[in-house]
Length: 64
Image (cartoon, rainbow, N blue to C red; front, side, top):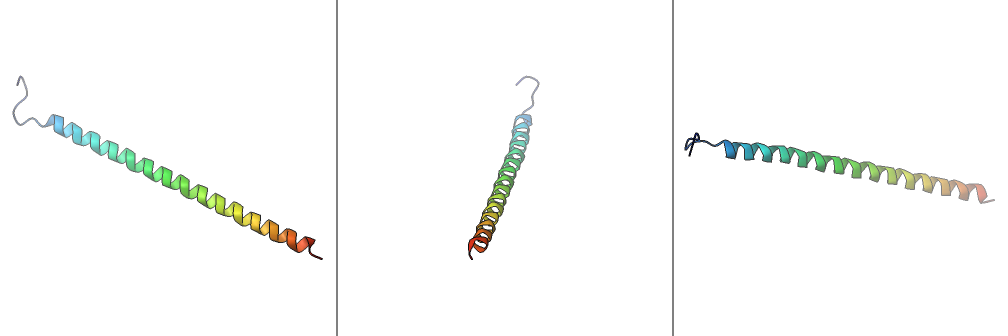
């Protein structure tokens, strides 16, 4: 066993710390992707609304 005692849990503690770090990284990635998808969805909705308003304007202008 060398200089490690039978109650040495440093391997397990470091594994728990690594798992905690990776969990935080994973949640940050999930939040980032969700935010990006939300922004893209809002941008597409605004673009579609602008297209509808522009087409309605053309119909009103062209109609005698």
